[in-house]
Length: 262
Ligand code: PGA
Image 1: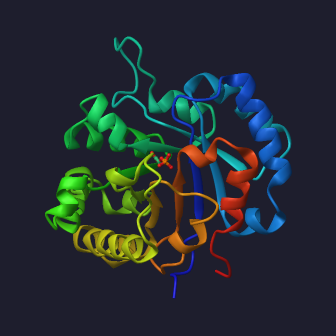
Image 2: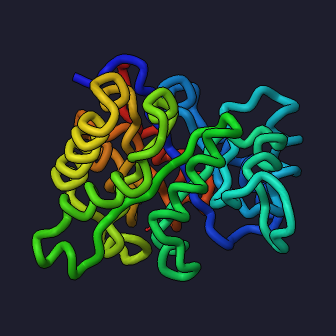
């Protein structure tokens, strides 16, 4: 049985796709397509580029939309001489509710270490938003049987210093790196096993309440075809979707597949 209060979250990471005109059209269509059932059961979040956030805030504010806003990264500092950076404080002013921390593309392409991820996570929490902390193993780590150990290391690196009261607001996304953008999703049983490990690691770091109320997502080649299976495990509370979130109809179908009856 899923613990009460863990509302499923279906989040669409658009990465560097969709300018703000496309973003508006996409979200208008998404709102239209989302069945009442999906919006009642799952929280649906889109994570566009920074340049689209203000347009979408205005659009979503106006009509009590079922869609909430997320961002793909932020700076660790709230303000200062950091050319090109965007702070969590600025994102909070745009009604952003979720911010990714430690997505594997940023770890790999932007050199974000566990320490940097932990600092960004703290900035997101300090500004009263929820981080979506991404963790996951490489193909080599998986082949070496190091999947669960790697998850524990990344969780400890990012969450050991986080106050337990804040961990309750944190979302963790299990994103095996070999599954991202490859069309090779994990199996539902693997997503469940990883989610269970994540939850028990958080429990051992921060106690039962944090472990039970934390939401755990699966990400990596989620489609409307495999979404229901990937969310079937009792510890999997939703999905983080890349490519398949770019199309409104497909993303709405994924939201419709979110678990019911909580
Ligand atoms: P994908 O990306 O769904 O395109 O595999 C997932 C992600 O990077 O979060």
